[in-house]
Image 1 (tube, rainbow, N blue to C red):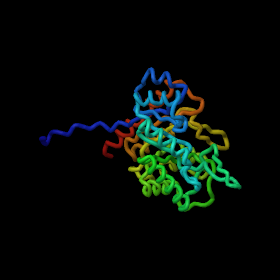
Image 2: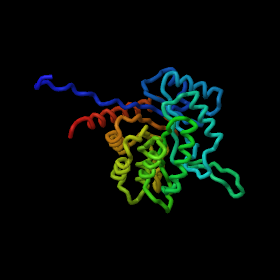
Image 3: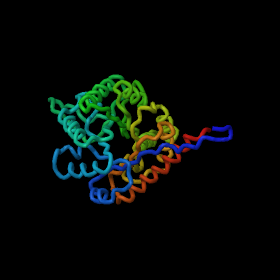
Image 4: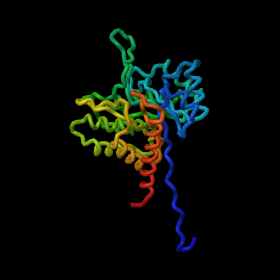
Length: 298
């Protein structure tokens, strides 16, 4: 190369983009096969080893990589992992061979007076204490040992807060990843919703600070979704388009974490498939802009 020649500019890395695959879109998605990099489904909906649901999932797996996202492992439960749940998840993972397996940094299992087990119908936050961290590390390790692969653990949108804490949420999640080798699934909308519900927080500044505190090499996936302002509280309902502020935080996340696979979640008031595909296209546009900006020297 001569002194006057310049190296060819390199295009920024592409960011894999997917959508949450829900039953009303089964036939349309399989027939049209839109340009998506992966699909994500809720693991528990496909635990039955036979039947129509598993058959449809296999058809999707022939066309797209599948990410399994669970809501029932209860990784923060002091009662440990439900063996029935873990065995069904392991069988599903063996059958589908997903690109990722994830669940939440939450608990939903407990014991009633008298010893009967109780499974709550909500994702409840674990306290950010050393004892809770030990519990979650043990549960994550048990799941990973059974599945023979790392899992990704997602931050919550939480509507209650424990009065005791030894650390903040990013420190807790970083320690979880470091001790177990698990990955993190960072839900950008959850970060923003929690900041909106904190009367003392500047939502955008707080969101950026949260993202900056997470170790970049641990993040396996990003989630994007809509939320609803109910007046006295903001709810992460996955029922609308991603708002401008969450897109801004998403760009910040990509500039910190790199080209991380990103998912559009939509679970309530489910729209027509073209709306989801339009949101995925918007995510690609934001990702391209963010990653190109990252590649340009300041």
